[in-house]
Image (tube, rainbow, N blue to C red; front, side, top):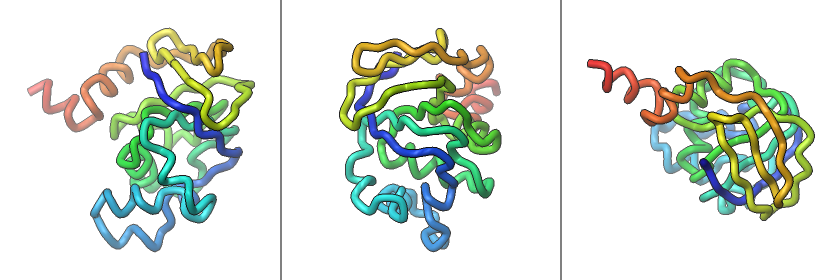
Length: 156
């Protein structure tokens, strides 16, 4: 079970909106966290600790930069919910240990309480339940380990 506070954003949020290319010269993840969503909404990064991002369709489209889900996780995002994700963003998020849930039609108001179950494939927002796609057991194992690298290290 994952719990957090809703932060609602639009659809077609590309990886450049998540973390602009000008911040990729550094490997310091704290810098990425400070500037996440800066070009979308300059004050949004301050509201992400403990947040569940609820996005529209095509979340994470654009380039394949893995820094985008890393920046979200570093900023304190506990999960992302959207009707659809760009496939490379979806895979990168799972690989870095950022939980995702695909589900449609969520009515979202910033600050709503959110609870979700990746294993069962549902989210509850402001008391209303939405059914989505449960993650495969293998993806759940990767998330439970904290990402792909810790998952493989545990297999040694």
